[in-house]
Picture 1: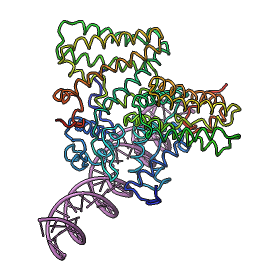
Picture 2: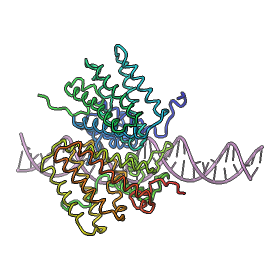
Picture 3: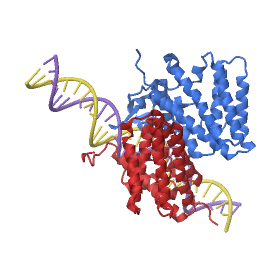
Picture 4: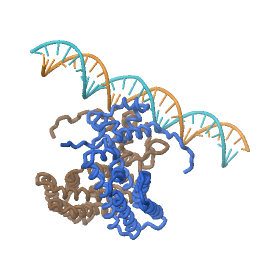
Length: 253
Length: 253
DNA sequence: TCGCTGATTGTTGTATACAACGAATCATTT
DNA sequence: AAATGATTCGTTGTATACAACAATCAGCGA
């Protein structure tokens, strides 16, 4: 955590730069879905050679953000409403497994300290009178932390990898719709319900109740599903979620 | 299904060749786990240049068979017993989700035709007096087909992708331990139980019983877990499963 | 005007060249 | 002899050159 090695140049600096930038460009909509990603045009825009760009594209393809064309080259993928709902459901299922595994493992107090602290911080945050935009940003950070710690508690490298993979689809994130939700009148209630879920999941883990922990974690993901449905009914709000440009436009009457 | 284009050279022939060969070499144990994969040595052995090898290595890394070293280069990964069990459990969880989704979708007769046929063939196979090695090979083919059709019935591209990804770990396959099992005296009973699972999963889907379908699919995966435990208690048999060389040797007294 | 053909351009897949970094080796010193 | 420092070797990451293929566009003919 020291300030050492701030601009530590890794050996593969160009590749990670290309990967980060390309992912950003895809999520921005700067590279529209369905369009072929011309490697040379990226060379111009990023100032790195084709090789690292190619590597990054392969990784993005494995992540699921671009598709490998049979004729050669890559295309930015397009996602249907169903794809998004499926991603959220899959995350919920896997987090359910994580919660169950965590409960069955009977972690000791030391292992639970961090996530307890996280839930405590969330409690404090929710109790504030008014929730500013910054508060929502804090919520996102803490919420991310909770979900990440939950997966860690399952102590399964395989499961962790799989969950991290699905989270590469930005709209599968537990936070994908928080800012959409923040504009709803019932926003506070939704956050309270979510936090109640967090508390009971933790409680179930502490009590070693695997089945309950799994059911709760799944139920928790349905909040994201609800928020998705709300966003889907309002194009303006939908446009503000991460990776919005990747969503296939439904025909409108 | 015609005989057309048998040796159709795709554009990226070298890359797929490298990917296939490298995967084979890793699973063979030809490239021992923990050892750095020197690209130049692969160049000699495969007769393709470094570039396609590099691409293949990136893909293998995303598949989880090799790890990306911080210092640069790739290492063949090593898997603990727990990793294997976790992979099987994760597959079971995702197949459970697939079965539930399939049931909830209420597929019509036409959609169910293939999997019904598959279960029928399995029935016929199991009913034979004696099961030869070829019979077990047939079983593996049909079993693979059943699991694949089950995933297709869920009609979720996201889920399908995730399941296919976990199946890249060879010991996560539903068939990983069938040949080990084939040498057990109770082999036939295990196959009968598995087939009973297949039948009831299909039945639950036909009846639209999502919860039951999910529970059954999960239970079904526990057969693989049992077989894993059996294999783990007998090093000789363990060595015969696909990717055996990737399994970390436990210290023996 | 429409369709077909041929050339041209653009893009990818592959091979290779090059430079920087790390690891191992060997020599030197204490 | 052990430790330490310099040097050599090997390996990777990156850039670029080249060839094959696809797509596009112009021109020609009906």
